[in-house]
Image 1 (tube, rainbow, N blue to C red):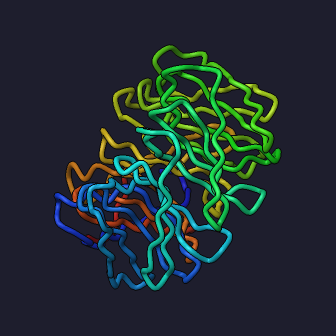
Image 2: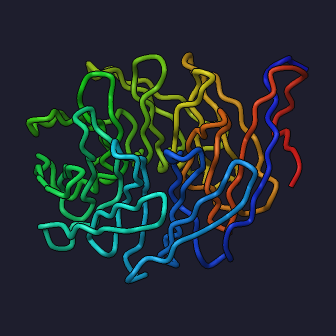
Length: 312
């Protein structure tokens, strides 16, 4: 038995199974905020586990990915409503319809320019919205790419996955796009994050791999033990590693900068983990589509057992 950090998991029920907790982010108020994609709600879970939520109007917009903005508010995409929306920590919502019809906004992240950048999965575009709601759209050089997640890179560019084009892209502030095709066919990348090592890390839901790309485009891929685990989202943790969800295998995994992988089973069966983010408490939090939020706390002492879990 090897001595590694152990992980304990605590689940907080936040909704019924039909609501579909999906994206999650750390808010400016010390709490975690998450989307309920099927019920059109935004939820908040305090560090001790108290839950509140806010109903969106209309509820049919399909809130997907959520992020903290540079203005102490939460920003999220409405995939079916074709809008970008802003919510204050008091629950006040302002929505901004996109100029392109059927754009299908999905990923969103704060950029280095005090604006929010987002993907338009249905329109092969990357969008930029200022905190006062001015929108610019940049076309991608690939059609049918289904741009998905997006993150700020270490190089003043925004990096994003192109799920259907099997590629990772980077966009500069002036809209110049660089495309990096993945070496493995059918990788279908989704989540992406900036790692502590100056590279971008992403998940290949179609190939069961974790990918790493440097700003100059060098790609490494790390196969997961279960090729059918369907890794979905990835986030950098305070420990210098990246943490990811395995939607198809009911696990959360961790990958070190040199590619070593640990996996941890979730307490509830078939919980369908989606988004993952580091909380203000240093723990990793993940949204489970069955209607719960799980907190993963790392303990630096004691033996590590594959799949060690804590209390329910």
